[in-house]
Length: 276
Image 1 (cartoon, helix red, strand yellow):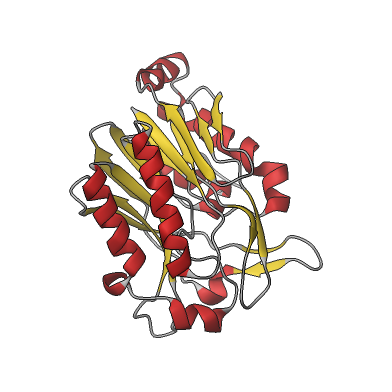
Image 2 (cartoon, one colour):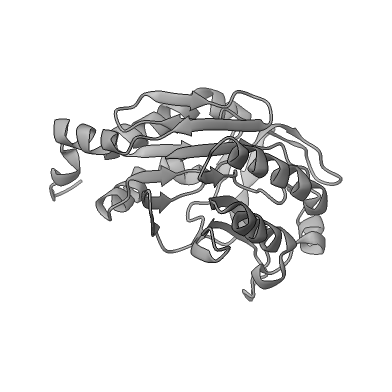
């Protein structure tokens, strides 16, 4: 199976981001990818809540989702829309950070709402409170495809290994981790954590990412780390997308999952224990 990791540097304008995203998806499919993945926040990256309320849509009305579903159908590919920022009908008005798996028919095969919110103080001047604008999901999700069972996660989920353990023990063979990883924490932890999640669960990890400085009409501009990664079940980095927008193609041999699990069968070795 050939996968295509799409690396983007989106702005806070969904209408301007869409044609660029479509161009990269077509390039990936043209390179032979039957499974194409885009990063977290494919439609918009913004910290301005008022601007988000003005430009975001509910799932049923979202033009990016509709266009990318049509694109997947036209190209005959499986497409993971890493995530879209969407309005919800929640009483508190918070948004959803929602990943979509699109089948080659254009139908939505799975949805996953990001569970872990990025509420951190990276430094004295760099603070994030994702939960103020987005409500967390509550359900882990796997999805069956012709090339293997996927386990869906998004960005900050990476720091919570119990989620990935649950996905792998639920049958996931390929873990997807679309991200808009902060450039400071990305430099320190991105590759190490992705390789750890692959090794400890003997799964492939496919992690398409946002990169660069993101243009914004309001709010503080964001910088993201890039380096979209594909990592094998034994921990080898198969592909690194670098720091610029584009497409990274990688061939996935699912036989490597069985090989790794035969060598270290740790998925079956969990034990209950007491304390602390």
